[in-house]
Image 1 (cartoon, helix red, strand yellow):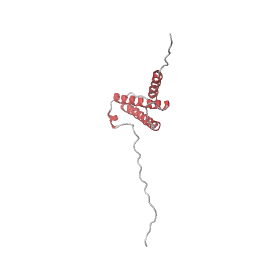
Image 2 (tube, rainbow, N blue to C red):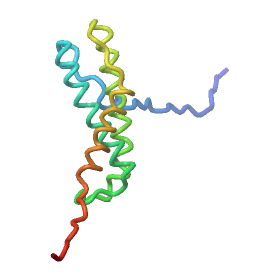
Image 3 (cartoon, rainbow, N blue to C red):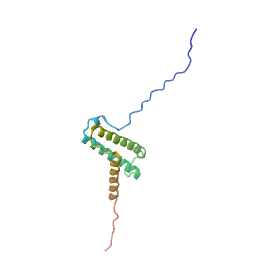
Image 4 (tube, helix red, strand yellow):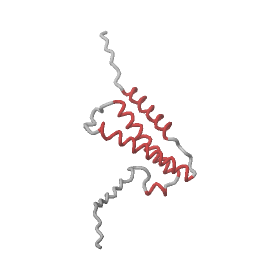
Length: 127
């Protein structure tokens, strides 16, 4: 008595998403607390600039139509990096810097700098 099996077997390919970009790098694990703090401050500046540029609109001289498309993703990546560095500070026993207040403070500096750097109107008098 022959046994027949009929059917369709489909194997779905295993899709492995690439790891999220720009969180911790291999070198980060071996950094000192001072080096982690320096990397954190650099990341804070990048995140604040991206936030500011996104809020300010198109940038003179940036000359890229991709900026509005790329910058939000870059900002998310930078925020993820800040969170990872904060966690690394905690696990290594370093002084912990919180990303939210640090980015807000840096953005405030950028906005103040932009207000102060705007050209002032020159008053001319005939005398």
